[in-house]
Image (cartoon, rainbow, N blue to C red; front, side):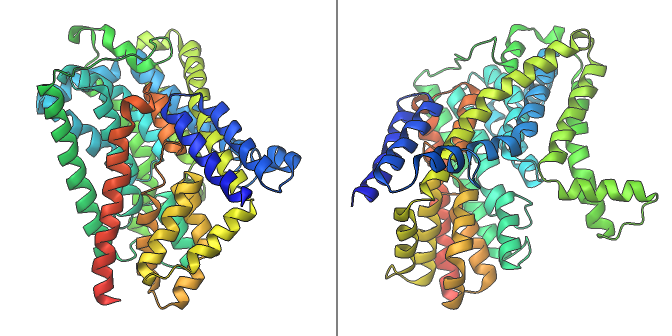
Amino acid sequence: MIENLGLFGALFLLIVLALRGGNIVFSALLASLVVIVTNPIALADSLNQYFTFGKLGAFSFAGKFFLLFACGAMFGRVMGESKAAASIAFALAEKLGAQRTLWIVTLACALLTYSGVVVFVVIFAIYPLGLKLIEQANIPKRLLVGAIALGSGTFTLTALPGTPSIQNVIASSALGTDLFAAPLLGIIATIIMFGAGMWYLEKQRKIAQANNEVFIDNQSRNNSPANKAKEINSEDLPHWTLALIPLFFVIVSILAPRILIAIYGTELTLGHDTFNQLIKFATTQLILWPSISLFIGSLVGLIIFKSVRTQALKVLGDGTQDSILPLINTAAVIGFGGVVTQTQGFGDFVQYLLTIDLPPLMSMFVSVSLSSAVVGSSTGGLQIFLQTMAPAYLEMGIPVDILHRIATIASGGVDSLPHCGAVVAMLTITGMTHKQAYKDIFVLTVMIPVAATLVIIGCAAIYF
């Protein structure tokens, strides 16, 4: 009994501390200790292995994603200090109107994530641009965070058919399906998430305008390269076409290998073997290749813009430093999930989910959702579900393609609780707190995706 109380108490403690603005690393460690002392698991193994170097360990995550965070932050520094991000922002606001900022940010994030760019990279790449746009439109910063969350953390990660997201790839490799499994269900969920999400953002923008809620950036200028863009006038900017070149190099270097593979297939005949090997390397390294692409974009920016070229080492060094806090904060929460999954209570919880007296599709939805909620990760929750529970649901007769799509979409709902690693990283990078921005994140990444999942379960039940 005390073991289960410890698990739920630790989860509750972590959520409360996160909502109250507590240091997330300390909060994750404290919550992990609560789990350890209330469960019969060894202290040494828990802290030296499960929290740190296990499959869901903090340093396993930090080691895997370090280059991605570092290169993303370097790119953000270059785009911010060269004033390139501000130049693009001014051009977009002039062409489309600053009032369409939330649409611009959401669609830009969606394009990048659907192209296979990892969420953390998208945040680093879009944030400097979005910050300047919302300043132009005088839109509250919390809605920028909401737009980034909607575009990078919902339909393109779990629902849109063909997305090369980690979640979709995990399900495909585990179940033997392809990335376009159950496309109609995915399209329906996408329409719901995007449509309802944009309706909510626009409604909040109008409410904020009526309540005289304006743009305020309370992030430290010393810690945010994006804030540098605020201290300039439009006449001080490089031309927007020049400013687009580094971002163009990043996107093209990420997309080009996938496009070539799609056109020519896996058996490339594009010339020299070295080139063919490079293409195959790019399409198989889902984390390393985007990191290289971001670094290439940073180098291109340094070459083009004299203002950063003359202090290249400082800009890149400051960018690397910018990445440490988001990386460690995110890793600490992942480490908490690593401890939780080692407890008997979590194992019993998994078994209990399999015996719930619900229709198979609803039972599966509950199983995936709760697994993701406990570990605060759609990736972790989906992996746990596929490894421990998916075979039982397949034996119940659920078609494998429907299981793939519903499980993937369900994993991206209740995972986004306050202790979610991606939420923590997003708030840290943007300089916001849970108190300031989490309400919008919750509506956009929890309530709406859960509603979309329930709708497609109803649709699937008609044929299942």
